[in-house]
Image (cartoon, rainbow, N blue to C red; front, side):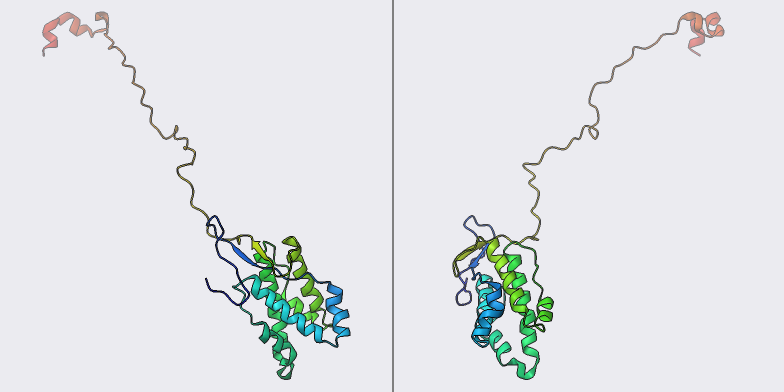
Length: 208
């Protein structure tokens, strides 16, 4: 299956079951990412970091539609028309949430929270890197760029019941009893209990 450049994932495992592999990203110090390196590089580090985390999202899951260059341009020069930087901040947060789901985690990253934090000293970069670090910790801190196997996504169609291995149901109450019925011998009434008229008239009365 053809994928994007840098992505070598697969949609099936070695046993034929549905699965996926992707490339791991880098675990970074959140304080250096948010404040120190951008300050020392006059903001250049933040642009490089923004490109890299969007590339990590693309290489991690082929279903995450993102072009890292366009994401970089949106925050670098998109401020000219105001809207693109904010759209990019929101969508990047949603991509990280999708990565968390791919890694078998609950979606804790929220694009709206990242958007709000971007108005306060660019705290969205600290927030997003923290959420990314949780993914890499969940996967065992793999080396940057190494292939990692992702859990099968939950919520698939339920499997059909195995009728061959199912336990037989108790149908005792539904099956009619096949035991033979006991026949009672006929009861003959003694002659003394016959009607008086029959006893007097004898066999001739029985033929009437």
